[in-house]
Amino acid sequence: MNIQIFGKSKCFDTKKAQRYFKERGVKFQMIDLPTKGFSKGELRSVAQAVGGMENLIDEKAKDQDTVMLIKYLASEDREEKILENPQILKTPVVRNGKQATVGVKPEVWKNWE
Image 1 (cartoon, rainbow, N blue to C red):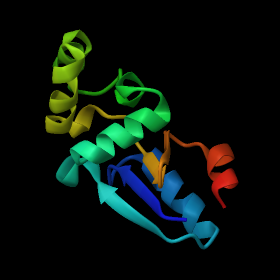
Image 2 (image 1 turned 90 degrees about the vertical axis):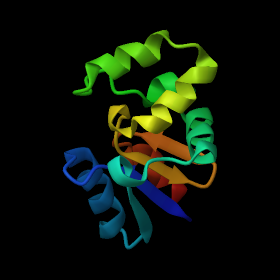
Image 3 (image 1 turned 60 degrees about the horizontal axis):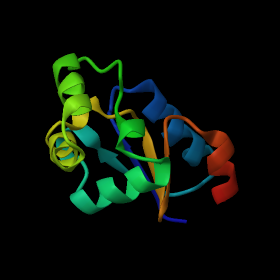
Image 4 (image 1 turned 180 degrees about the vertical axis):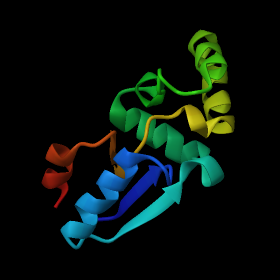
């Protein structure tokens, strides 16, 4: 298992994901989304695993202007805008190789063990 948690340091759901894996003794890599973000390949891989870019966008993000802009952009421009603005993504994004989840999903993580 190669667990990566993409999240925000002040996000309660990110902390829940970290706690879940710590309690089970599973090592994971924590990536701070606002400072590091996703690489293009990571974003594509995660989007494919969760059923599309739309499922990664947080409708309730503070930056509503960017959320609205991304909704109405052409799909080829959307990816670039998401990479520039990682603060509009739902957290945590938990990745295990080609598999990924968005949000707290212990029922899925259990199957990864």
